[in-house]
Image (cartoon, rainbow, N blue to C red):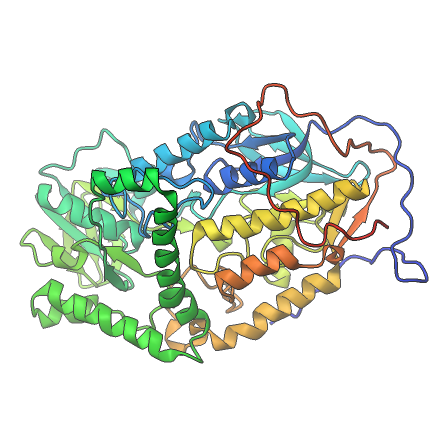
Length: 558
């Protein structure tokens, strides 16, 4: 495997180890915005709120869709819902006391995103129907030029990629798919007008979306054939309604809801994050989880040993993403549902032909085949100084980042969800620590009067080596993970989709990393206003408390 690549030349330093004095900044045309945020899902919304809390008001959010909410705007298939407790799957600074259920449906998550836009007055900073096709760094002016599909170009001093994982649906390579005469639909591009009642339906895939879709549609279809390549670990979903009295209590006493959140966060951290990341030290946590899931499987399939054997995963829990399901396994005991484990040989004009020589007719073919994840990073071409292509860099030199967010040789750029960013615990916890990281750096650059911040090569490489050094102790190193088709892994055998760290460690590091881990520079042709006036269209928000002064902000200027 390729080792850690050498980075760009280091800046000149004085005798005392300080960076050389920066040239005086001249007056030149400003970028259109100080910060460009790509993506209006929860990652983008959390970034925008974090920028405002840090006093950074000149930003623009770009999104290719016609509405905000990211995955919760795009995914509308039957049964779509959050598969982690909503008390954890929400912003800590914006609790939602009115969830209807412990695991609310997707429409409530979409509505929550819209509420956050309104609560923090972000709509004037949102530009929808704006697909980014390329981002290129201007080395001379220290700014990013972002090209849009409509031919426009937007410029920003800093660029934040907040597009999330689930943006580009994966269509399987199935021979004959183009010749199929029935209806084909991907779960990520569901047609709200599609009525499956009385239809013969085939579902390809058994991941998270299938676990939600299959029990929802089975009662109303004539026949449901589910084609499984790799079984999925499934846990019972305690999706209980939240009584009106409890919702009123949460609204009146938010500290009670915060206590519930602490409990759900801790449960997730112990049962998944610590179990996966500290597998070598605590293997019993994974084995206990497997035993619990197998017991649940036995209850669901009512003693059908053949079905149990077909549905039971043969890899360690954690090798790929587990799911929470309401009656998923039980659905396969219905008379109109059949599980197929034979490989799909081809799609015919009227159905699905499997490797055993049988053709199974269907009227609707549902592709529950997930998304391009690591092979969609970055989600659009990103060219750094000298035209250096980030996608090519990651493909040839392995996926690598500094603290899961920035990349050596790519100034003024951060990822909310990138290689080694997500711990596998709270998605919103990840957003929080990633935003904390980038706002500390931008704030420090402003304080120094700098127009460019780039992570130092030696600090970046040390962070990458730490991630690689920890991987052998994780569940991802278990031999059974091979052949699971998990999006956690790349072609090098690394697992860059998961940060080998607890959420609490990642949050601590975001608040305490040394700001001198970045090099700050000044463009001779650039001019910045270290304290720009707020956009008059944005009124101060009484609900928006400033973020605590970041650790390290007291450091002396260069």
